Every structure is written in structure tokens, then in C-alpha cells.
Image 1 (spheres, helix red, strand yellow):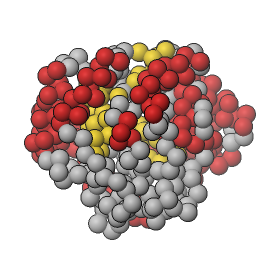
Image 2 (image 1 turned 60 degrees about the horizontal axis):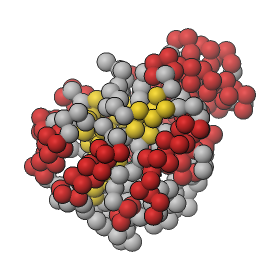
Image 3 (image 1 turned 90 degrees about the vertical axis):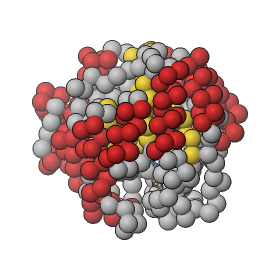
Image 4 (image 1 turned 180 degrees about the vertical axis):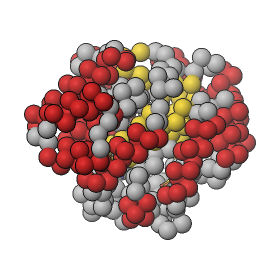
Length: 346
Ligand code: 5AD
Ligand code: FES
């Protein structure tokens, strides 16, 4: 397998069968080899720098009903909350003092937050903190909404496509949710001028090795600025409550493959990875990731934004997230930096 990994390192792409062979047949030694080349590639472009993004989970109301997600509308057990405009500004103020220069506003698809409300929030953040980037992660919208947020000052947008296969998509979503629309949204966002992040869960129900290979081919074609991946983790109040979760090894291997396939991409080591293993996020960095997204939401709501079970950083110690992460990153030779951390993908 080392030959295939060398080829990927040399050319930044493999064909579908080669990806399948690697994902299917790699040994522990192959993984180590992949990670060493992935870290080398990350260091060529970003040195030992880790970019931080302050995540503000501002609403857990959602009109959608994804089978895997703990805040789906049918989950009557979810305790719903919304942050106010002022709450969000306070999160940013605290985040700015802590050194964050990117704020990620993430939420369910919540009709309460009209385009006008979102634009007012984005505008307020950009007016108070002109040196900061604002990232939105609020789901599928129409072109004119994306346009309005961009004109209000939003810089980036995260929308995981969840899977590159429309058949696989149908097995994880109710029929009113269309894979084609989600992909259209991604192209729309790019055409407007956002730095765009897509992504998927590793080990999600019904996912095959072929699907994973197709993810890499999709990424290569779409050329996102960012890619968010993490293991699927079952949530006890969803239709997928009893499905197996994704594994650490599988997720790390995909991170390594993504770093070599898209050398300059911004690649977060996600909270979900930190949830399935105590050192998951450190291991993610050592497989090629270069971004961490600590939670800036008020501690009082963190136990409510539960997309999956056993999420970390939801307890009383959570206010210390940034320091804790900085220490963790230092322990593996990485340095957390205070700047916007824009993508080097053109
Ligand atoms: N396990 C892991 N990730 C999940 N997400 C949603 N539900 C789960 C789960 N059970 C991810 C989806 C979504 C992102 C915000 O969180 O990929 O796009
Ligand atoms: Fe909210 Fe999937 S449940 S977008």
C-alpha cells in the first residue's frame, strides 16, 4: 500500500479503485506512513500553526428531520433554546478577548431567524470586530438569502453535504430533503464568493467503502476551502439510536487522505473526534488536520446542543475550552494562532 500512498503524495489524486484499495486494505503501518506524509504536507503550507474558530451554537430549533441528528424536529426530548442577538454579541466579546478572530454561527434550520435577523447579527459582528471573519453554518437556503448574508459581511459558509451519493443520502434523510438541492447550495455559495466548507460523517449508517472513495473524488472536483469530517456517533433519541458509530481509525485515515488530496485545505479536528477518544483531536492533528473549533456558546446552553451522545466540553469546565485546547495542541508541537486563518485555496 505504501506505493499508493506515495502516488497520492506525489500527484494529490488517485482513481476510485485506488482509493477503495487503500481504504479497504491498509495496515497499521500504512496508516502511520500516511499520517507522516499528511503532516509533512500540512507543514509545507501551514507550518505547525493551528487555526481556532469560536463556535457559537445559537439555536437548536430545526425544521429538518435528519435520521442521525439529535436536534431533528421529531425529537421531542430535545430541550430547545435560542440565543438572542445580544447573547451572541456577548459570546463574540468574550471570544475576541480570548483571541478568537473567526466566529462560527451554527444552528439548526430555524425559521425564527429570518434573513433580516441573520443579516443584522452578521452586520453587528463585522462592525464591532472588522478584523474578524464570520462563518455561517445554518443550512440550506435560497440564493437570495445566501447573497444577503454575504452582502451583510459573512465571509465563509459551512454546509456539510453529508454524502456524495444521492442513494446514500436518501437512507439518512426523509424524502422531502433532496441531495441535489444540498449540492446546488454548495455551488451557489462558491459562486457568490464565500470560502466554503463541505463535509461528511465517517461510518454513518449504510456508508460503504465505495462511498468513502466517492467522497474523495467529490472533494477533488468541488475544491472546497474547508472540509469538516467526524465520526458518526449514535444519538439515543433518533431513528439511528442503535446504529454503530464510526471509528477513530477510520476517521483519522480519511483525514490523512483528505490532506494529501487537497493539500491546502482547512481541515478541522472535530469535537466528534474528541468525543470518541480522549485524545481524538490531538490524533486528528497528527493525521493532517489544522483547525480546532472550541465552543464559545454560553455554558448554560451547551448541554442542549446535542447532535450526538456523550459530546465533550458541555460541563462547567467548558469556559476554559480555549486554554485547554491550546495546551493540548502544544503537547503535540502545534501552536494555536490568533488570526483569521484564511484558506490558501484560491
Ligand atoms: N454524529 C456525528 N455527527 C453528526 N452530525 C449530525 N448528527 C451527528 C451525529 N449523530 C453532524 C452532521 C452535521 C453537523 C453539524 O454535525 O454532519 O452537518
Ligand atoms: Fe437539522 Fe438535519 S436535523 S439539518
